[in-house]
Image 1 (spheres, one colour):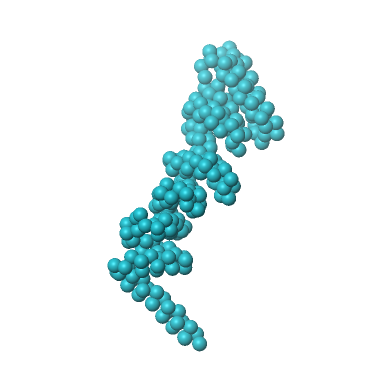
Image 2: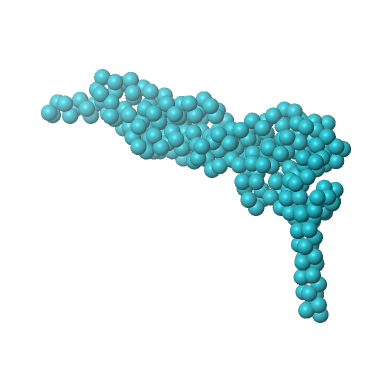
Length: 274
């Protein structure tokens, strides 16, 4: 029985493959459309895509063009689940469908999946975030155009995820300046970060590392600017404790601030000894 079953499966696969090869070579565009649609329904998106690509020019301006253009774009979207690069084509083709058929019942879905394809193209936060910004813009445009969409909640979730990538990148750049002893650049970057992302979940860390940068900058300052630097550090220290009274950095930051308050007196003693 097993042999019969496997033989049957093999025969079906062989027949399917030979039919696909035959139709691919056939000049009959309607047959390509029929088989492409069947393969799409079976989840064989790559083969359906190959057939659709051959016949799209033949259906321009015809009633079937709307369905064909939609299915063609969707094959790229589903193919993207295996090969990320296909999301480039999915984003383009589905947006093209939405622009070509704005009154289609599939226009809303196509718009969302086009934007979602751009979301999938967003790289890790440490890389250039041009594609992340583009994805946010497309998703926000969708939200603005379809405020009552069934995809609204998911779109907003994707926007938040992408926003966090931008936050994380900006935060890590500012922190990296601290780690390589470029304290002025670190402070400036953290100030910009706090202005650009007022609701960030990284606010506690940003406030602490800004204070840490000012602490080290004060210790390296010329004598004439030490008092000014201490006052700025005090402001940053107070900002941290005001925003996060129970901050995990409380003890460490307090010890650092007390050290800065003693710093002018310690410098004076050193001068007297010398």
